Image 1: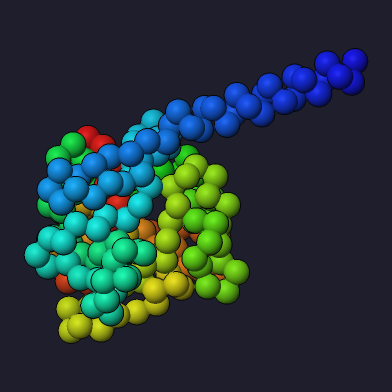
Image 2: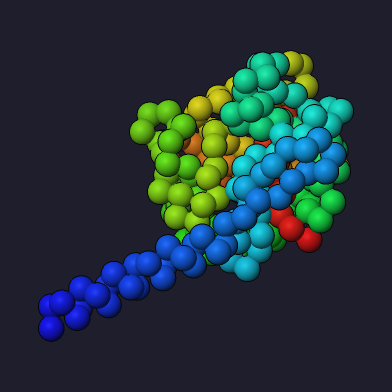
Length: 195
């Protein structure tokens, strides 16, 4: 009986690994040849990395190419709206909400979406879905940069007013995902979702 139970558990574990592997994939951006991991979460296919397309109006954190390689580029909102490659788009506020709800809701989703390494102060996540959120920090229109390694900020395609748009925010010391709205001139990361 114990041998039978052990075999059933082993087969179930392998089936789970296989299911995750089938959901993981890659996408090559024809504009610059960069390849991105993609992952299916909650019925949507998301890039599993921050966008690193050198669109006009985007910057590397602290203007260092090594930070673009690690975290992707930072975009103002107008640039973010058109930065995703063909077949993908900047997620709406509703698409962000669906992702966060699928990952356990605002109070717990950050822990499940964060990468297993790269966050300061033991703020790493469990990366349950392979979404691999990294703390790319943010920037402002005056050339200042803030909090790489500590926080990640991602644009949505949804305006909250003429001057602001909704975003999602994760911080190293918290397990949650915070919905807020900030100035469209701010520089944040972009995650693209398939059309």
